[in-house]
Amino acid sequence: MSDKAYVPADDLTKMWRAIIEFNMIEEGDHILIGLSGGKDSQFMTAALAEVQRHSPRHFTLSCYTMDGMFAPDFPKEELQAFCARYGLVHYSEQVNIEEVWGHRGNTPCFSCAYFRRAAMNRKARELGCNKIALAHHNDDAVNTLMLNLFHSGQNKTFLPVTYLTRTGITVIRPLLFYREAEIVELGRKLGLKPLKNPCPYDGNTQRQEMKELASRLEQVIPHFYDHMASALRHSEDEERWPAKLSQKEMLDRFRTFWKKDRNKPAAAARKPEPDS
Image (cartoon, one colour):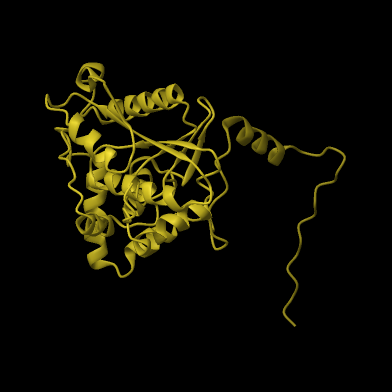
């Protein structure tokens, strides 16, 4: 194995911070990297391979790609060659997304995401992996927050570390402190060659709309992005309404409020005192 760094130390600072702050990696972990072949997952693979070389906690890496069968020329050999550069084994499987979607709804994005997660969880269990690494960056977290706020009224985004109770697998997101533009620049510096996304719906989704909206708002609202990124964290300054009561809880509140205590005399009307 070459002694040359896959990723320079200065460019790993934000990944080390995420790994250490959120305790993403533990001794003996076997992590399955979700490798789409795009800029984000390529950089994450190279960075994690470099972290693996220096981490005091020993762990194993493998890579996985789900072929959604959107195009006939799935770049299996290119992905295998890319992983081999870092001494990693690549696995892939086919899932016909168009077929399982059945053209229900506007786009197959929900079905694709569901089956991609299911296929990766299944492969992780098959390989004995206890963790999955996804290449979501800081822009993705902000865009997800906006998407949930604007489309479902939910103040939430994805977490740095998520334990999946049904599978016993933990999902980690080591790129959370990187901005997308930063990853693009780092990829150029490392000579990475991202593969084209074969999805015919790429760039035509609600997530893309949020991405474009955030970009426009950054131009007109000072520190818009920084403030949205700050909102990803819990804060002592939060002032939000209590959680909505269930119908039963609200009914109980009404009954308690209007209930009369028969043993207590009615309060006499209080007269206003004259001004002194």
